[in-house]
Length: 98
Image (cartoon, rainbow, N blue to C red; front, side):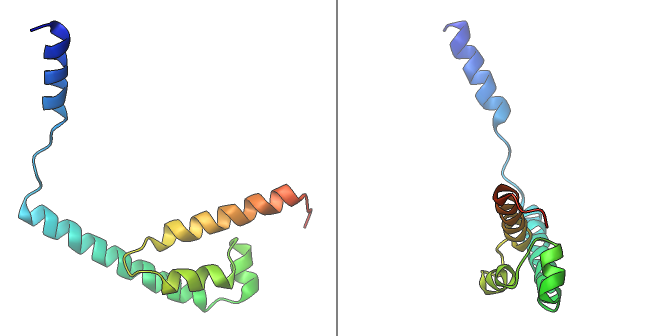
């Protein structure tokens, strides 16, 4: 056996992780559920804001509606962040000074 083969064998053994226990899987599932529920509450509060307040955050009403119609476990924060950054990027590219 060459040294390179031995090195790859050691690296592959070092990267293996034990499977999570049943308790860890239940805890992670509960954490994801609570996080999704909290995100839904925040999105519902965002839908109560008027269009000018949403625009101050870089969002529009359709972004919030898209998140509300998405899957319960979809990451609402990620979707809204991407939408706001894209809108800011388009605004800067247009060269407007408002």
